[in-house]
Length: 243
Image (cartoon, rainbow, N blue to C red):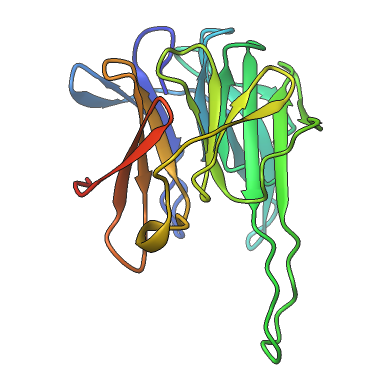
């Protein structure tokens, strides 16, 4: 994600023996470690730019040692101010797997989805209900939204449209949804994950390419090669090249 100074920043951990809590910026082709000050989030799950506040926002957690053997995990939402992390909220979007800025409502949205799972006879594992959940950040807390139209229950990734005017959701069924500011609206597409190329297996990664007017989607696949797809207007195209 990019901050108001034009730098890309990230934070993360290395485990299980040591929590690093490092924050790095990528600028002019070089990674540089930043002095982030105290109260640094020790792990980040979701990261996105928020142009409304000219900052990078991180959903993650900190770890506090309660005694010699136990630790306390405290979730929260932080912003990067250019020289340190500042806590915005003790709330997080439950079960969300993707975070992005919505230019229509001018706030951050988070999405999480999962297909229902029905265990076979004798498997000894419980059935799992599916879900499709949308969250919005008010600036002080995360609130779950209940739109009239809900995307199909499936993992998905949020990304800006190529023109930067809308927020899109792409799920593992190859469905594309547009956030209107209040509701999800299905955007019909063709040529997606059918036959040998579907359904996609998450987690998906997506980004808009304004120069070509398309969305670039990376689909990891543990059973075969990773896949790269592009969405131009309403047509998906599969490409053999992957990083």
